[in-house]
Length: 133
Image 1 (cartoon, rainbow, N blue to C red):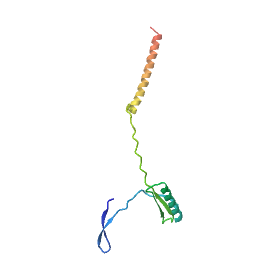
Image 2 (image 1 turned 180 degrees about the vertical axis):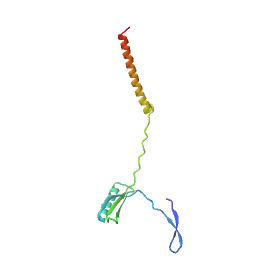
Image 3 (image 1 turned 90 degrees about the vertical axis):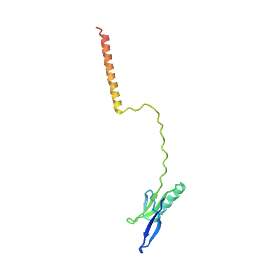
């Protein structure tokens, strides 16, 4: 992470160079439980820490925070994302290219017309064979 230097002035107008490392923000915290007493919230926090230690989950964080407005204690959790597995590459076999919807529709209409013509020719042929004049 890049360290930056800021000049920090105090009330006596003397400047000092001080190394400042900005806070890194992570995933947002999720509220899992709200309790009326700190002891309940702390018990839940300890339980989560034990559970994560057994499952060897690294990077998980839990904290208890008091809300000034409501006076409730909330248990907040932040769990890192698991790495996503690499996407499987689907092998495409060479084949006939798919026809457009319009071509498919036209082929259906063409087959219908051909079938109608063939049936009409058969009728005419049958009529000519039955009535030789």
